[in-house]
Length: 113
Image (tube, rainbow, N blue to C red):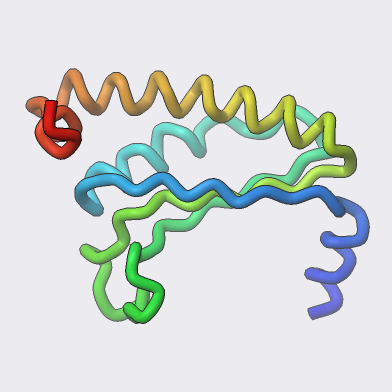
């Protein structure tokens, strides 16, 4: 637990972004595409996880239930947090657009377009 406290002390500004996707396959594809780009600044830490949208679901029991891409940012300043999250949102937009175009319009069907 000491490492967590040290990270929280050194990187006091944080944000968790949860992106629900229709399937585990799409969430995994988005995760793999996004995590390739490393954080450029040592003043920012970022971590990813695939989660179930239902908090009562045991994530370890059912891999297919993990359809939410969760990204946690921690930064030394609120400005560094904002800059990093802005870059992430740009990348996320590109990844979701590619998924929509290449995955037989799955996202369009889910959104009721």
